[in-house]
Image (cartoon, rainbow, N blue to C red; front, side):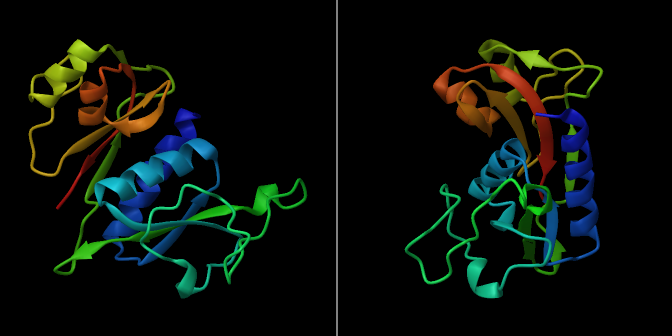
Amino acid sequence: MSLVLLAHACSHLQNASAARLGLTSLPSTLQLHNLLLSLQRSGYVSSVTIGGPTPPPPSSLSPILSTSHFQLNSPNPRPLITQENVASRRLWVGLKYFRNEPVLRKVQVVSKPTRRVWMPVHKLEQLCRGNKEGYVKGLRGVGESMYVTTDRGIMEVRECVERKLGGMLLCRVNAM
């Protein structure tokens, strides 16, 4: 995953939440799509939809997790991604709010392009317990999450500890 693109996506999501936008778009990459699906699974965003340069219709913004990119038998089939339209594909993200406050409050990049942070599972356990590991602070706040890319995909740090997987830390997310 391009960490520069990840940094832009994190700051864009944080700014869109602060501006109280209901729907925002990001460049369509597979890694960013997997990260957004993990954020949706954790409850930080309401929907993730692959679309074009214009926003999708509200009927296609279902909060149900979708792992397939194309639904050919549905009433609203998504357009196929071809070589001609790949540059115009966007990920449309529905943001969540609770009591008129954004659920996604703060999104910070942990690994930077000049310093990638890789951690084995025993160091991830320390982060989950709230202890500082290297220059990375532990998870202490309520609703705080950290996302890790592993050889099995992008997942939350607690899930990595359960499955005994290490990996590269991507970002830290703070809720309300």
